[in-house]
Image (tube, rainbow, N blue to C red):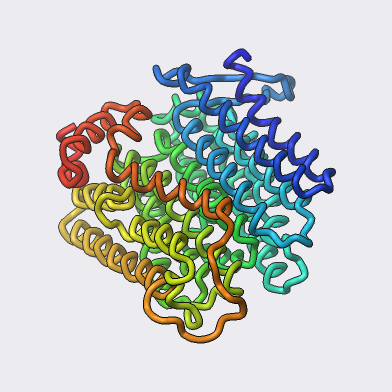
Length: 508
């Protein structure tokens, strides 16, 4: 297959699979279809790496509205490729996990159809080669997430959570559409390559600030950032496979993907620092503090997700190159340990019949394998050494210490970063200790035991990734590095994990 056709096939494959899955009735057949589509999409994404290794960009152009100067442009560079791996890789694991999590009476064809269609919409977002096209797929993800969050529509909480998510994210999407229209007007084109080459003109424009506000509203609503963070905890009524896919690895990452995509042309101004950095810092602290006091397992993970996305947003808001590298690295790390934790929480709920921390405890005795995997993933979320979360946290501290915006601001940012890190340890301990350690707190709705091994396999693979990246960062992530700054960072990781995390960006 010609390499320039691969992006188009990647876009169409999940939608075609979703339509076919919707029509299938046999549970086994629809499961294998979903797994096959996700596996083929992942293989195609991996296949284009040789063309991207030298810094090339794959472009596929399909005539769309030539009279308006609009074509369907699919563009795959290193950033889009990384997100394609997350979307397809975790999508594959979720497809396997969902087969054993979803009740036997549920119509799996509808579930997998929506899940694959959402995968296709996310592929459209990350491979969009013009900003109007990006806005279209952006709104499509909001619509499909509404259907997935409200999948169990017999419950009032699911319907309410789905409505809230749709209102907030679709409203932000309309703001984004207005913002990209302004962005295209300033740059003179809606083509992404033209926009990325017009950074100086965009930042100097009188329309820069209103355009930035509109784009930020789109990104912050999608990533559940302050003050729009409230919709994500309400969305936890969705089936756990939906939470593991949408709310840890894909949909909520779309907002930070947008900030990363436009970082070269929008970052570096005072407005960017205060709007993006301020929202990220507020989300980092509020999410972490709220997670400490939750009693529902998925609520703890939801608020911690808000906090970690705030960390990523804050790193981007600081405007440094090392901050952007650290943000990309933490996006991948967060997707691995948070998806595994959502799946572990689903396994606990599936086997015990409850997610209430006040009723759980001592499950390591009856679920030893799940307990071990969840404890390692929780340690990664807390930033324990030799796990991927530790490297992210140290890079976060390095970026905050290298930011110089006055003594008072420097001390404040560094102090709040340490405070948020302390909260992350506390809510990680609550998840691990409150569920798996200690003594049982009483009778549970169901007699717990280990979930099926194929339900544990996706959790184990994600936890293995957390360990491998933490222990062998240069070997695991080194082959994907492209920038000189990232190469320098990976070399330091090979010599010393601690020095890598605390290295000054100016030494690179």
